[in-house]
View 1 (cartoon, rainbow, N blue to C red):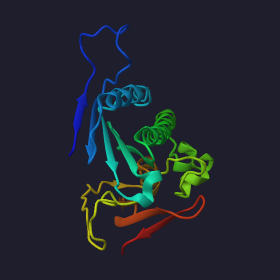
View 2 (view 1 turned 90 degrees about the horizontal axis):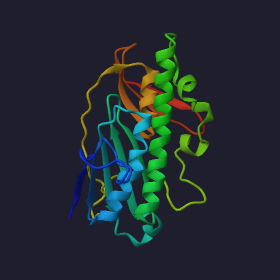
View 3 (view 1 turned 30 degrees about the vertical axis):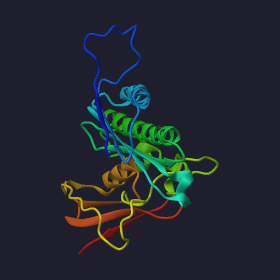
View 4 (view 1 turned 135 degrees about the vertical axis):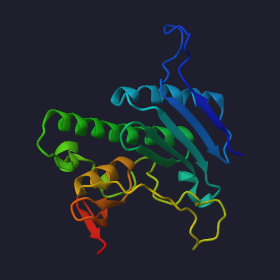
Length: 230
């Protein structure tokens, strides 16, 4: 049974007496998960510290999922955190053997992407010269394991690369989710930038230079690929 919680900053509470809270709306929901109050407070306090990276964030969407699969006991708890603000959505996701471990890994990933977003915006605002993704976000200095889409080594949490319905008893071979996105024309650099923010291995976009539907995707090591439909 899904459990949903919405928390906003109290208007009348004394700032010296209450724990740090987020000014953005926080929605915590679970799939096949009952969410205790102490975990909700923990989530709120952790997310409050991320707002300084982007004051335009108005909503944090946190989703907990549990996979009933004995073969996945070390990664059966999954958390997705999505930050909604003025710019593109920024997402952090992870799996672990506990929701606390998964949340720590997911929020670390989200913070890293928010910092890259902030750095890119600072460079763009301070210099009118076109800036590439590599120059503005420091792609060359990112963790190779992240760029390669590899699982984390030496820890229990690992980034999620599987479908949302995995572990819930569905039959394989079916389309289980359909999404529609607004095809806003953008450059290849902007498409790579947004792909990194959401943590996906590919990104479908409308190339404004060629007026063609295109896909950028992550190759091995530090490289990217580009596919255009003609």
